[in-house]
Amino acid sequence: MSKRHRLDTLPILAFMIVIVFTVASCSRQELQRDAHSSQSVQAASERPSLPTMLELGSEGCIPCEKMKPVMAQLTEEHGELIHIEFHDVKKNQAIAKEYSIRLIPTQVFLKADGEEFFRHEGYFPKEEIEKVFRDMGVAL
Image (cartoon, rainbow, N blue to C red):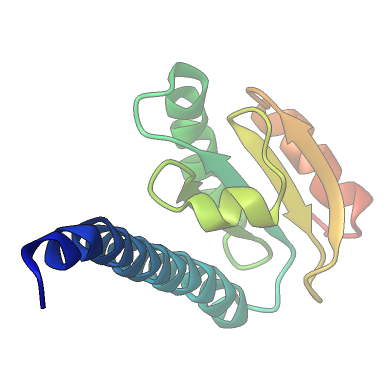
């Protein structure tokens, strides 16, 4: 094989290496995305069959932080009748995508069978949350 012929094959070889690394990187990202998605589905399957409020927010978000004591009070006062879950959408982007989150915090209210009943964006006072649960038929 001549020296010129070997030099002509270098760009082709470099191109093939770039393609292999690109495909490997995409596959790794898909696996990570699938893992997050399965965690979200797994969390939904482990959810008790109670009316549920999903609080979709993030650590450090001021309105999200203001919702923490509200969620704690609701759980303490009505924990046997309702279920409250917090999901950090920055750490679990799959759930943000699953619920089409545009703004945080977002509260998604699910009936006991998992069907979405209502959603709200922003800070949501305790009394208003209790009203939504009562509208769902929960005797608070």
